[in-house]
Length: 285
Length: 289
Image (cartoon, rainbow over all chains, first blue to last red; front, top):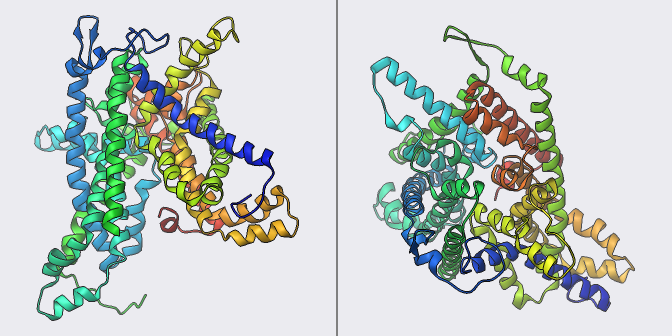
């Protein structure tokens, strides 16, 4: 059963086999996707026809590699821009929210705290349509009332940023709050006794202490934004983000270029995530 | 709380409160109020509109709508249960069975696939399962099957895909709750002659209940709101409810009907979460951490 107890060999073998199968199940789709990115074939399928890098660097009429594929490169660039905007805004507001809920007292705090958590339990699709409807109504109102046509209210880049920001900020808030809760507030009191104002204390002391959590929160925000599909689906305009663009291609048939993009994503996110894990661990020790 | 307590609206409070208020009011509260209002609105022929429950009546009158809704809910429950069954032995193995040296590595391997976009994971399964896919290639090559078989685009493939996608959100709470289980309880049960079934049902599961509940809530909610996996792996004539919503919005352009569907989905997911929290007497704030 557990480490300290003796077990029959059949049981032990069976359990190990189960765990092995589980991890095979977990990694099979990713490994196969990566391998087929290098297959010299027009389709992402076996048989293996030899190794090629053309799905990365190729520039032939029937075989355009990802680094020469304008449409996919554009969508990667859009995703980067969206993720950058969301990360900046969500980190700033999330940090404010962490201070608000951990250190301030004000009327209606429990209600506001509940509202802050609510994006976690709202399905992403619903958040997307709600924001789409609200933006559309606001757009109509501004147009009818003042004759203003505001791009922000139409599906497109900024609406995607707002929609993702709406729920990613909650994640940043929770990450920063967790560290802020462990902060020794006597340090602040000491600084105040020495004549510092509240904002100076926050700037010079508390924010320095929070830095690892803020960086960690920003990394999570970037990753979540870069990969978001559900909320983005309803808010996207003509500039598609990478997940939406990939979805459209996968739905209508696929070429190994998608494998090449997937390979880059798998390698990229794994490296980033392991680095983040490593740094957050070494910072905390 | 003391009712006579004075709140001082200091500069830091205003500085922290205003962006948070703008975020929550403009992007969470008002859009969902708008969702409810839109769902109650019916467009007239003259371009005006009136408020009624007609959109909701339409939902109950058309069997295809409410059948999809019920089907989605039932499948989401099934997926949640299967995810739990698969994840519990894995979480137990990582926390209690494997040598502590390997624990970190296994945990990392467990988390790794979920940092990658859901779309890439679903795409991987499509490459494996489809008629020209990798699994068919091997099975036909080994002579087990004469002809390639289409294994994608059916409910079994869809459920498996949903279980795969949800795994992380079950495994992580289970691991963290099992870490706090004292080994000596299991040793004592073993010494007193308990078999595996009684140890699982009378010690491990009762102890793990908080983790099981929070895992189940998250998995259920994510499965209910999933669009990618049912759309890409499920059968073409069996819809998921989020696909109905998408069709109303994008294909039929009937936003009022779509809003009523959205609101019903939100209601169902909130209801299940609320019931789950009530049954186990937990607070939302505790569960999410």
